[in-house]
Amino acid sequence: MEEQSMKAMQREVDQYISQFKEGYFHPLSMLARMTEEVGELAREVNHRYGEKPKKPDEAEQNMEMELGDLLFILICFANSLNIDLEQAFQQVMNKYEVRDADRWTPIEENDATGGS
Image 1 (tube, rainbow, N blue to C red):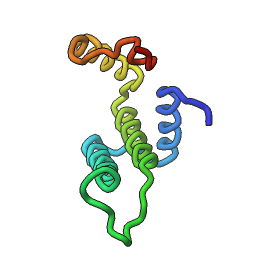
Image 2: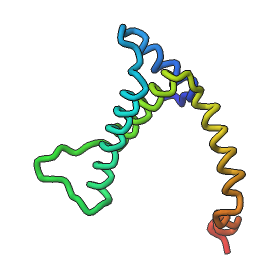
Image 3: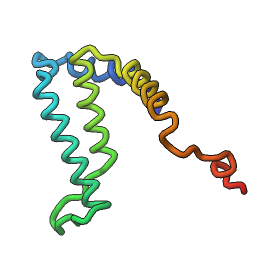
């Protein structure tokens, strides 16, 4: 599968949604959908890595699909508000790079290459 830019993903989702009369959901409905998807992801993470194993009759969920569902609804939300996610991402990365520049311990070159 070919790698897609975020702009391409936003266009693809918009083309998909634009074929339906209903279009994008209202922002509050979109937020509810996003919360629902985060809950499904949280449940799967808890089953795999947490203290709560699945019940024997519970179907195995695919973590990749749960993250994909979350990405889809996030793109829908952004599109409905005319937000360019590539631009938003760059703004956030710049914020973290400036704000957290001295917050974490950098990996030394020897650490990163496995040398001593």
